[in-house]
Image (cartoon, protein in one colour):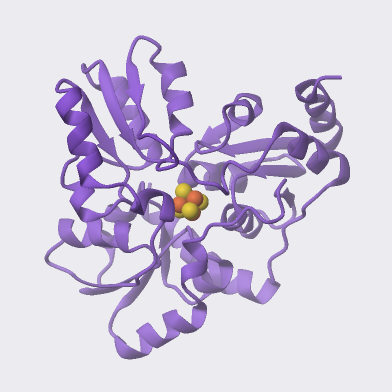
Length: 302
Ligand code: SF4
């Protein structure tokens, strides 16, 4: 039996839902029940009635799903699919920043581990970071762990003072302004849509900056016919499906490729369902401390 057919059978047997991030392999996106960015996936995981959530993404996403919906079995098909940026900061680092800036709110990108969320005041995703930073009463904001997204919202809100952790996404951070310039020279009509995890030189060249779902929406609504999509290349799969008459370009080579997001294959999803592997667990005390920051994020993003 073909993997996709076997997955369907096991999915019914387990009363499971398959969630996939836009950065997953095209065949994983095609078999998923829901494809989205971090915010949309977290909401779907929180609200699902399924017994089992197969999370085709990376560890912090499965952890977040487990904290939001703790009675469900949350499976990460690849045990070591992680996020290098999430591992660039520890809870101790956050506590040191807090001690140095006692008046500041701690805003934590969801691309972080549960122990870091547990010592933060509020979470955010790239889709709602600006809105959440604006909504905070504090003038000072410690932003962890992504200096790309943190720098972007700091420049947009000069009335606030930001203390930025120095984490970064290796996939977005290696993209250079020179590459964007070279593309523009060859495609003068194209719109350049960029994810805020990129560095400030790259973001300065954007026609639009937004999360993956905001970039997709922008491409759908724009009258332009050509787009350079400056984020992980997996997102082009959905864009080409939604707008088959438009042309989407990504950057060459491994520049727009997240190795961890690309680990999950169909056979891994099948094995996850068959053997209920790899079940995500979050320490109860950590989850109790981390959950309010996630709930505040949802409350501030409606
Ligand atoms: S694309 Fe970057 S932020 Fe997203 S999972 Fe990969 S390393 Fe982490």
